[in-house]
Image 1: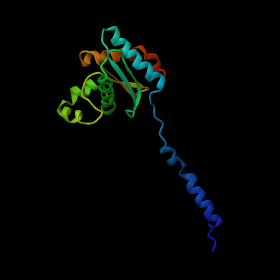
Image 2 (image 1 turned 135 degrees about the horizontal axis):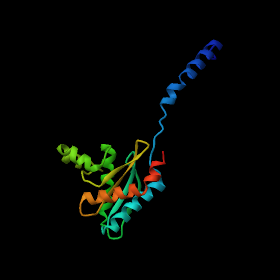
Image 3 (image 1 turned 180 degrees about the horizontal axis):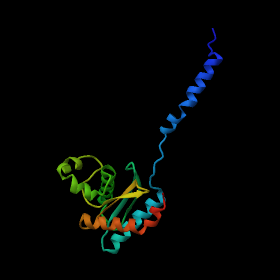
Image 4 (image 1 turned 30 degrees about the vertical axis):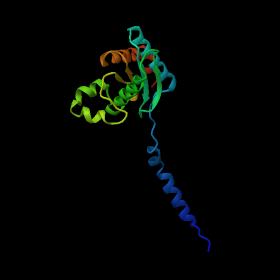
Length: 168
């Protein structure tokens, strides 16, 4: 026995489907994330800023989901600095602010956060903000102290400030 929907049922079904398209549209999110070219230039600028200051470092940029977008290790920087840089950047994504601010504000759970794979509570990670949204983060490691790592990350973001600001 064939199954069919009466003509009036088709109209009702169509009306229900079309009437709910605004609900469907809310299910699609438009999000900002850092592109490859800008990520590459941020790590390059960070490494060069530290090199100019006499430090051999690594720099990593992750996107808003903490996925690796770009990484660069200077010639004499220890290989472990790549991992530390990424963990600093990941902390920025998790905390939504500079890694140094997380260190200062959440020292009560420092040991617990350091046990989470991919995170580290050290200075040297900064957010990359585009149009008021966290689009990614940069982490730097290898200078003698997180404050110096952070200075190199900040120098990179300042050098590319116009590109970041107009990426919106």
